[in-house]
Image (tube, rainbow, N blue to C red):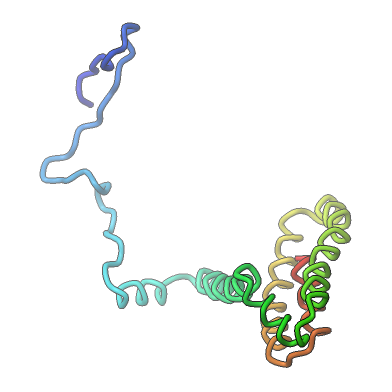
Amino acid sequence: WAAPMPARGDAAGVRVVVPPVPPGSTGARAAGQKAPPATTWELFTSIRSQNHNVKLVLAYGAAAAFVRGLWMRQVLSALIYLEAEGSNLAVGGITATAGIAEIAAAPFAGWAADRFGRDRLLKVGGVLSLLNVPITIAALMSGSLEALSAAMAIWGIV
């Protein structure tokens, strides 16, 4: 460690300790730490070499982000509006379905977390989310407002 120095402008004598930088190092990374991937190929091969669970989490995250991105960016609202032939009631109804399901599930989720444990409940929620991604995509592809409403209700529960 470098010799302690008084902080600038501090009359109380508070000292700042600065760790030394090893010779020949820029101080950007700790010794033995790899540099982050620089190219797309290096990033791809680093993902391929990851644990199976890491790959599943990345795949789920991408699929869930796709589905939620449709909803949050108003693309889904526009699709519902067009599918319902210009009905704002359908857009509001499907949005309300997710909200009502969330409100209805909240007390039971608290009870289930106390009864079965938070970890188990998170696993069940993850499985439901994973199963709901293809359900939502299929509902979008089918054009059925009822199926889309059911998928949004599951998102509300999850």
